[in-house]
Image 1 (cartoon, one colour):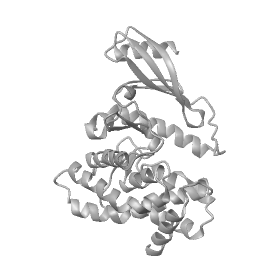
Image 2 (cartoon, rainbow, N blue to C red):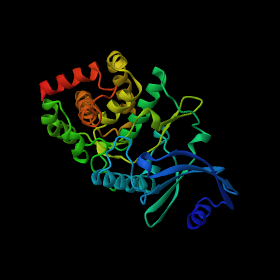
Image 3 (cartoon, rainbow, N blue to C red):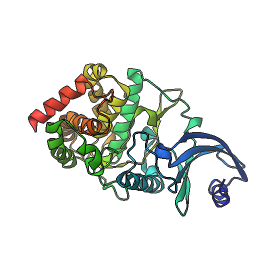
Image 4 (cartoon, helix red, strand yellow):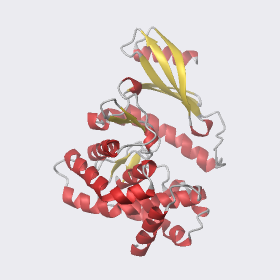
Length: 318
């Protein structure tokens, strides 16, 4: 353990001592690791530390080791640090995130110290029941409602890790000519929606934590930023449901999301106008993500008949 970091974490958590308990996971492309620490003499029994080491050369599992990729990662960690320090405390209990306990930086390394969600949200899921899907949609709705019309100061101007402007290499490799040609138009439609919020940006199933009584929290805010909330919803549903399930439950689950969003937004928002606009953008958001996948991994299992049918429909209406 870096001695300067140890001094800092003891001060930040008012602990008398700390010990590394386990490495929870390595960061994508080898940029560090997430570690659980035990704390003695602190109000926190444990804490989770995201240790980012930019000295390491990123090794992408699919070979996307470019300068663009590296710079995107560097910015993503800057954004995540800013999110936890200046934004995370604004979240309500209905869009629970880890409490920020402190942050330390030294040359090309940084450490983000966070509340350990395992205490109250110990469950991780590989697949979800419909009730659990609804719980995650509730989290997203309250997150989007909380930050409706906020400027993404210090975050990505346009959130999500697949945003077109940050993915020129993947765009170049798209073989679907009509979609490739329409990519900038699709991006523009989403970016110019009248109703904008802060999006999580990587709202996949793996980034949700569950309590024993069905509550939900979310982690991993590297790609948090401005955008239409349908981007998060489209990506989340695709991450935890098959194409057939998405097609079968699309209306029911969107209705669930918008019921919660109505509760979450400020009364000053014209909710009927918001709902009408965003429902019309759901399939556009799905198509935007397909644009990324078709360049990044054209054999991906999420490129299914349901999604390709949506792509065709959206392209026909542009």
